[in-house]
Image (cartoon, rainbow, N blue to C red; front, side, top):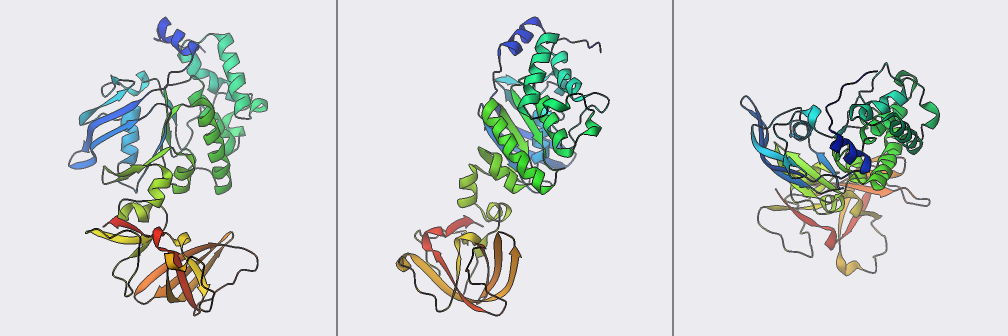
Length: 363
């Protein structure tokens, strides 16, 4: 295949000498489609080597943000910088980036090897170096024996590995992932999450991922951004977002949350409640016990309330209880263990939690 390339000698030398991963910055970026504002006054910095995931419901602006960064859309206002250089007016094909789409977008008429060679050939990399990089990358993604196959002869997980390998093989300054595991079943998704985390740890490439899968975001990310109506609702580490959500929207969107809105019992916490907030506690922080269960040694640090089980859902490693406490409704999750007491609908139970596990979030 003869491919014309406009990559300069200095650019090729830079590629061959090793990657320089980019810092990404959005400065007051707005994107509108007619009267609809998809992204509004977005300011965001992605550090070199960071794995950032953007989460949000449909219409939140997460995919538009990724398309702006990829160069498939241009900002209506504001600017985007990559490694300190404005790229708002630079088309996608002139941005040195790796992209993995949900459908992988592999070339169906090329073998795995030729799919991996293509981005290197476009950058003017010589044949010997292409062969070396392809061999190394196939070994890294455990596909050394499948280089001669066509994409149609691969499983979904294998195609996903090829797509990742092709995106990373030229050591682009940053990598964009658009629902990269959305086409895989649950077992393969979990397997590929481990593989992607390992690849990111090894290569350290600056990565921006858009996904609707909360578990995927929590597993892979150094930092997560939750978007709502085109704006950032909260940006933080996975642990902080889950354990200390700033708003009721984030608390409900990222996992399940018990919101104690106007309960008919007096709840206690270790911190005072600020105006305009509501108390929240995660389902796995609550213990479900028989009414006559022995009190814990740290009872002075806990709160207990009595309620009635309305439903019990068995989900393999977990049981989920729905419990009515006066006018409040609680979800409780506990890990299944041998010898554990199982409660049924209609059973009277005690719910017990540490006061320090109560969080106050903005309404």
